[in-house]
Image 1 (cartoon, rainbow, N blue to C red):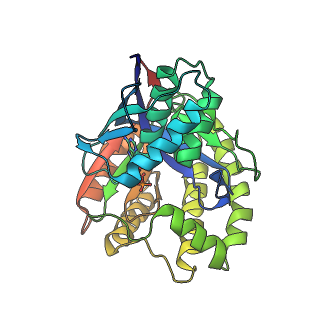
Image 2 (cartoon, rainbow, N blue to C red):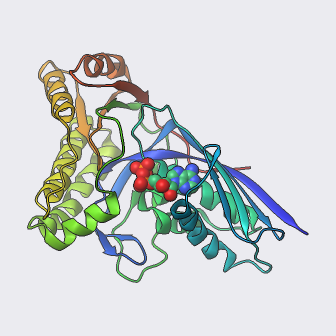
Image 3 (cartoon, rainbow, N blue to C red):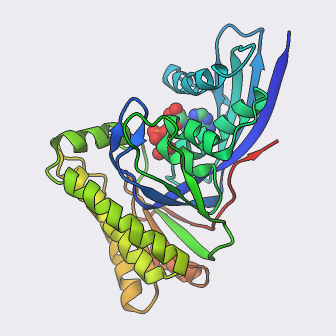
Length: 326
Ligand code: ADP
């Protein structure tokens, strides 16, 4: 009986230019380009062991057996790796999302990036970062970006392009910025991202406008990132956020991810700016507010958010590294 094993770590990321909408549901291709920042501290560690003795894939997540649905998502990724193996077998996957509990941050991004790295390595394959990114992206678009540290970009996908991968833009040392996370509510979101995106595409009168505008916004963000121009980048990031949320809100039935605390935190960010601090907000498909600022302002931003009515917890994240395989 042969066993082949590998361990990998990856970190979650936050989109500065948001991803919302798919151009190809089967291949999980995004309809819009996105740019993200991989974050330190939000680490997933995953060990994959291909084992001939197993009769099915087994996934252990955060110390418990994963649900059937979670295991099926892992099997989909593993099947794509097994297709390139000479002697494929089932695998045991042991994964832990070592996030501070108050994060409200995407676990699928770091989770599938780490799984892709560990599975490909355990299979004895030497795949390029682009190929690893395409594999992770198929399971979760944001996971394709977490292969890379610092700032990375996932282009919009042309339907049918199974190889679509993210690419690195700038490493984690490019720019000393921070993301301050304000947790605005407990509990899972009511409408998952995949369902929300499809409902937006099929029913929102703003969907086409969002897709059209997202390209221009992403171009502004990429340029501002290169120049380290926080105010230009921040304004474009806020427009990207509000445009995609408007698209979701105007779907039928409407999807509203915000809570009263979300608005309160947005007002705090506005007030910080009025007093001269360059702080800019973004939200994903959920109620939490994530604020981009210079490293030197992070403590001040954190204090202001922590004092905001309803905010449950705050956390400061700095740029982090990409996939690491052992
Ligand atoms: P999130 O906003 O946390 O990314 P999603 O609902 O998009 O939430 O993704 C959560 C799903 O991602 C889980 O149900 C599971 O299927 C998968 N997932 C998350 N973390 C891991 C992990 N470490 N290993 C394998 N799968 C994971």
